[in-house]
Length: 71
Image 1 (tube, rainbow, N blue to C red):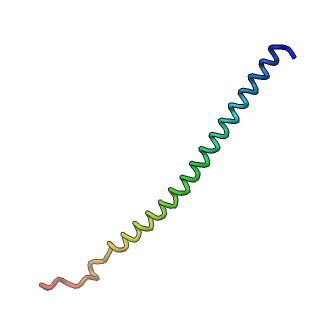
Image 2: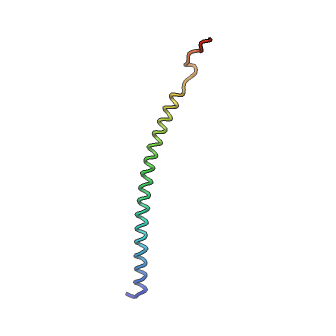
Image 3: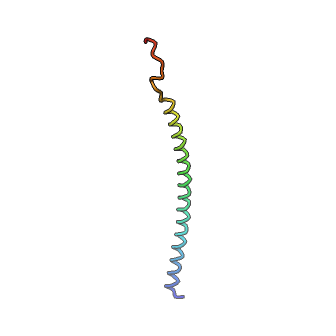
């Protein structure tokens, strides 16, 4: 093969190697982000449930309370 053609092939091989490394890195990043999103969704559900529990315990109808003693 001619020298310029060999040089171009080597350059393409280097580019492919960098792209493969980048894809591996991006794949790991996407996997980490997906895992973190799953964990955050679970935490959000727990926080919502806790907030609903607090709302229920704090919400009461004043009409259900007995009248004050001075009445």
